[in-house]
Length: 134
Image 1 (tube, rainbow, N blue to C red):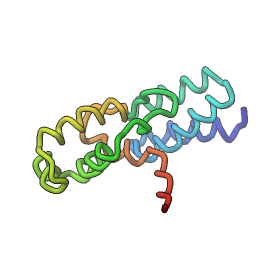
Image 2 (cartoon, rainbow, N blue to C red):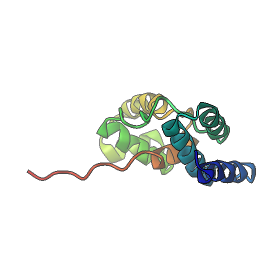
Image 3 (cartoon, rainbow, N blue to C red):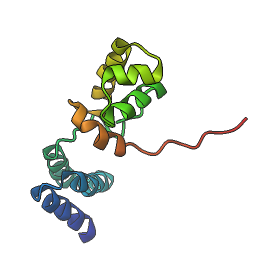
């Protein structure tokens, strides 16, 4: 284990204590992932606990967001901008109940419990691979 990994964790902890949860999540997630790579379970657990304290949860090892369908991802992105279910439905030519159903499935896949957490959870997703042309 390197001192820089411990510094990343300490910096994330300090940011969280200052109320800068969004910035803290970046540092804490990096530290948690690095400790997991190194097999440093106690340090990984500490980073994970700090990450949970920011309000972000983890559904499984690097699984957050992988199971989102393209439609769920689009609904989640629109919801993260503050649009209501009827507004999203109108934008995507869906029913408000379908939008609600998509969000019902999105929340556990992202490990979140409220719309307020959507933006940060979506930003934490890995970038989409570029589309291939046929």
